[in-house]
Image (spheres, one colour):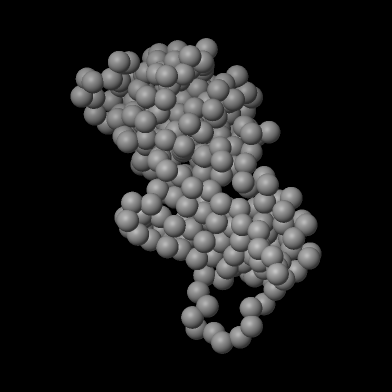
Length: 251
């Protein structure tokens, strides 16, 4: 049984993960940490992380960037592995994460979805076969109309996974409207669509002569990210200090 502390337990993802853990016989949510405690959770909630004295095997963090530094210090002090899901960290905070990973296990990934991380793995093999054969590479991502950044971090992670197999020789192109020329071979086009309530949709297109191969991933709810975080917590419990990512979880 993996005992988990949920940091950011009253947020949307915190509540989603609480429900997923409640239905998983291999995991127990033993405590939560949040800026507020409205008393509706079936586990103790601490408004100050330093007051949380509950024994656990792993902490899952889906909070906000300002809360991450104290959370990291808490995990280091208690040698508590951490699945770090909060985004938007500053360069100083990323340095703090790296420093903390020298003392405790930390898993950080651009996307917690098991499907996306399997796709990242599959793209490496596909790129090794198709890029030398002259296939053009395009990525199209679609998200809801409230998303602030474009392209998505996941789209960039997909592009990075591909480019790593290409010795970083390909250029990322986000807008072709200002040029009139044939498409160069060594580029990865990345397009962003924003509209409605699309949770997350990513297509990676390999377009060759007379054939097209498309890898697609669609998230129908944010629960896919929660499921990945729970699987990551099971994996990380008991691991030694270091930086891990979802590629380690899927093997």
